[in-house]
Length: 303
Image (cartoon, rainbow, N blue to C red):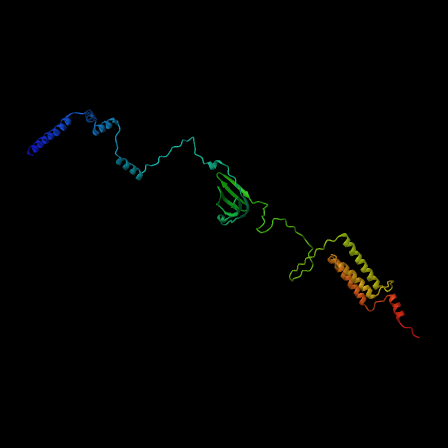
């Protein structure tokens, strides 16, 4: 047992020596990749090479100095240099080259000789309509230089215009009034004017009748006139009595009431029927001869 332990300790000592010698030998031995890496330039050498390539004439400025200069220019900006324009070329205004003409009309002026600044002009400007403009007022690019009695002086650029009042004013119809033409009718004024309230009466329109209705109406009027003449005459050959005549008149009137009768015809019929009734009710009228003969025949003969 003791021998085994001694042998084990000797073997361990030998292995320890081998492991110590082996890395020393291989560590000291050179390697190609390692030699190349060690021979390559370092960081400092690369920086020096890059800085050497820069131009020696250019002076490097730090960023802090650049920001300081920019802030100084912001606080104290340089003065603007005036451009010298050659005498041959003159800058002109485009608006002065174009000829400006007034596009509005003048309808009235209010001239105050004591205070001309208060003078006004009534103009019709496109898009705004009619409105008053004071003297020295502007209408677009035009200046109302002076307002006189019946004329205004307008200045546009270097030109001056005189505008007169329009002779014919265009009257536009007011709101709510129809654009149809209004016809004016003149009537003879009455000699006597009533001071009471005005009363307007409308005359009823006469209905349109056909030719047959007109003939019937004329026939009716003629018959009624004949009956009237027969009733008023003392000498008549008619054998009709009062009741029979009244019945016939009433029958004719009822017959034509169903037809459309105008106002004038109805008035005529009323007058004729009224006159016939008045004649029948008149006690002083002369009776017909036939009726007198009938009365004499009906009376008993005296013995």
